[in-house]
Length: 118
Image (cartoon, rainbow, N blue to C red; front, side, top):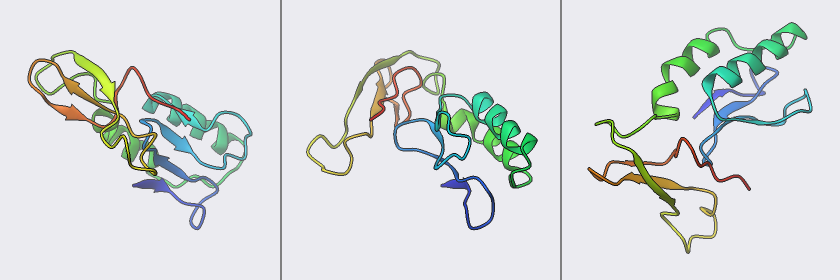
């Protein structure tokens, strides 16, 4: 899901399949990937300060999805197990990682402490 697209704004923001928020094609020329909602919101503030068109309400949408985008642990509060690739032989899913709770088996596609970047 994207939070903003170039057709409606000067930024293209989405949750990437590598477990980070992405400011795709960022005109600021710095990093594109952000491991926290706070870092992305601060990045969007830099765009606003330069007069770039950033959609109203995007910060609220990002914070609303924060727990889903960056889960701190499984729903029961257990620790994550080691990340793994759920589709190791699929040619287009090489960046997707998942982590499974070692206690209850709960699964997430956004390992909070070990994103895999290519």
